[in-house]
Image (cartoon, rainbow, N blue to C red; front, side):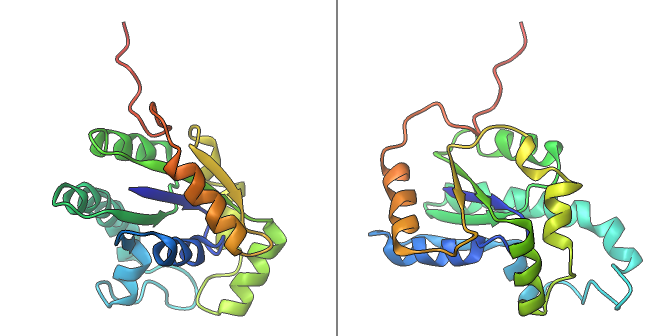
Length: 183
């Protein structure tokens, strides 16, 4: 599993698709946004913010998303997963759930002004969502990565190849390995 963690609009989908094309073997590309885009959930926004039901359902939705990842991998699928790991508890949960898997965790970084620009140009994100992932949720502070990349200038063939090279040369222990038990 190649797990991409970064703010909304940081370039995770673009990088995931580039990796998927460049890999010699087939990898499934998995993200919670794909589930939402497929119509799994009703529209989460009413123009003024999230619907009240989303606040209550969101923890269950992501707990299910986290649990589907090892289920897909355990049945023989290689995965490229994109995610916004918004809470330390999510990272801890993922670490426990995928402890038996070969997971390569990549931090996807992007300049805040570029995040804002991408959100405006996409038109399908709340402006400031990506910035809040960095400034409020502190998504890149919950632990180390196996690799960190900056996609401010986009996802080039050179960047994609550098990720693949690092992934192919990976050695344990990995960043998402569970913490050893306390003595």
